[in-house]
Length: 461
Image (tube, rainbow, N blue to C red; front, top):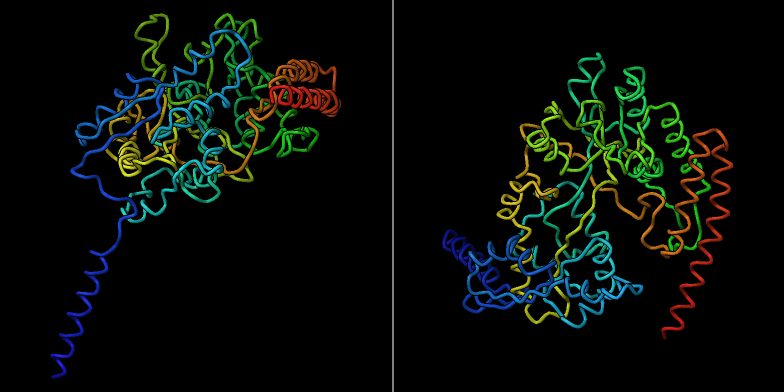
């Protein structure tokens, strides 16, 4: 009797479990016979089908696309009049009402926080969509832009690493760089090359080919997570110990040639060659640079193949496992008001799934798959350094330029920055004097730019 009772309880338990599983209501209704139609936003129709549409239609041949092209925005900006891209983008999306949105980092954050995107957490949980395969911290980065809710997924990302010439380090008996070095450690390592060669044969330790001295400071500032403005972009925060330290580190390194930094005339004349010529030991660049290192010697016979390798870009010692170099240029989300959410989710899921990660890992187009298991090497070099650091969360400046500041401020402030930094390098001003001047003049520019922006908005209304 007892055994029958146990069997009965077991059967009831199984039935209850089965009915629970079978009775679970789908978060999104399934497509009827696999059919559907999706309106998507992309750069243009050819790009969309080459990148994703053709692959998707192999798996889902009965789902149709209507591609809305961003080129329509460019066509509206042919008269040379001032053009607010974000404002026009909002109008463009409101007019076309796509089911799937392709958004930049800043656009995504705005749309996620304004309720224009569909939250994906429930459908991801129900379908057990794999989020563990992404690079560490990337999903947290996307969640942070939606105040904790996941409103989109990114199939690829950009980041920079430190490329170095193995043979130069070996030839001069200098230990090569390693992962998770601070900026000061990279500069100290670079300094060991300053006595090697001279004139046209000077060998640089670390070479900054683009952006000049301002860019060097900006990279140090960015890695430390410093901000140029307060949260409203109304007050300059440059007069701080962190900013002063970054400016001193960069200007000292350029002055004593620990960092090779060509003049604007040299840069315009093509002074980006030292690493390719074997005259620079280290440069900070993105994935695209590996392709250049492989391809350029094939069509430029003056260049020899470089025996290169990579480590992580310089980090902030206070957060050695984080990187400020990670950026997302394409985040896919489902529109909150879409009437085709299931079909739209199937597309977003596919674009961000293992199949597309595997395909994109072979393309070497400058971006990196966010799924780390499909991009293991470049020309025999490990790609571990691209994935080793988590993206730094929170708001921080990418240097002296801030997209949230009025354009008029940026235009007026940059020449002041270049002039002040040069004066520090030439020992005509101290760091404290330069920073105090930048704070005073910069704040005046910022106040004026905000006043003009408010007046313009008032006139438009």
